[in-house]
Length: 592
Image (cartoon, rainbow, N blue to C red):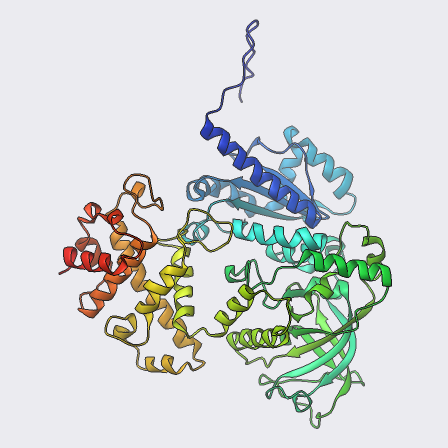
């Protein structure tokens, strides 16, 4: 037990004066907290006051919580950090493991601590009259301004990493569709629909909703065999809680954050909400979607289920015409993909503007017409993505709604077998972990990181090409590797080649980094002997090409030994376009 210190009488002790560096650090900490608090408010969460900086000792482990947010029976314990997440996570791992061992017990412990009396007041006045402590959903949200690499994430599990790109993704969405963001956020937190709010108290509550419509076999749609079309009316509330835009899980796959996961146009949403408010009538054009074959059941007029096999064919005989049907869809987030009509859909969002009162009355009316595409169960994910992207481009080719950058990103995804797409994938994987982890610029808001366009064009594309004695492809041992040149839909073969490329490139950089001081393994054009730049990355890649051409490439240990003296190499003496020259000089000095 700590003893309370008494202040000496007389001279008043002033506050410690902060250095410029400490002031800047505090500004960044405050900005991070404000951004996430504003986000949580927009989503619909409330904040427990007076939590920040409160220390506690739980099961013999001392720690603290930065913020607690709550919504119905959901409580989110939030941690903010702007420092090195690897070091910070190691310190937090033990307490996180103890909390996750029994979240309800930890919450009950907080309620008994006097310093957390504000949490107790919230629980007693808002929550306990509706939910027991065992019905609460407790989640740990770890918000780091710096990238948390996979090596650290796998060591500390059962927490939700609120990576800064994911924060920015949710911020951009929540600014526009406000509380309707909560459905996707709950999915991010791993909370099933059945465990949110009153649903957790109703064990018999249906997790499926029914909609009346029609089914159109492929003979009437001109789509390829196995692709079915259904049309039905749905209410906006039911659609919004199930929807994703073009491709699901924008927060889960970083390729979706920013471009491929289409962002909303705020003014467009606002004008549509005004239309709904003023005219009090529905938009007359339909919304194009994809539907989850595993989360949908189709019943005929008599109530019998229409069975569809794995290839998308009806097992019921004689179904070749358009016919009425009942569409049953599971109540889950991120299962209906909106290909066209996202602004019409989300104009019904749960907002806080002057139109909300009238739109709230429209949200539950089944007046949105859906044209939904059902894939065969056997259709690979890659083909589904390409189909959706192609259809989106066809619909938007003559419209101004889709930005050129968005169309570029989608076309990039549509051609995964191109050397440019393979190179982009490699950059992404190198950025996840290893010696180049977290060093490449991936998002518009990132500063002081390595830009990737030049690395892809002048470094990686020549290295991964499907021809030439200086490419990784030349010594990749794979019996049917020539099929990649034909751009067949062999995604397994593509995955194997991409993984091979990542491994070979990472190996040479591991060997290089082993002989460079950590202080110098940084992206900084000015400070000291820091060596990382686009020129250095492309120079080493060009060195690898020469090694392959001369059959002198090897494993990590070879590179470690050959680069033993590399700390003396004049990396900064090469200009931005001297990639080949640096590669040749590295080869001559350390390998020839």
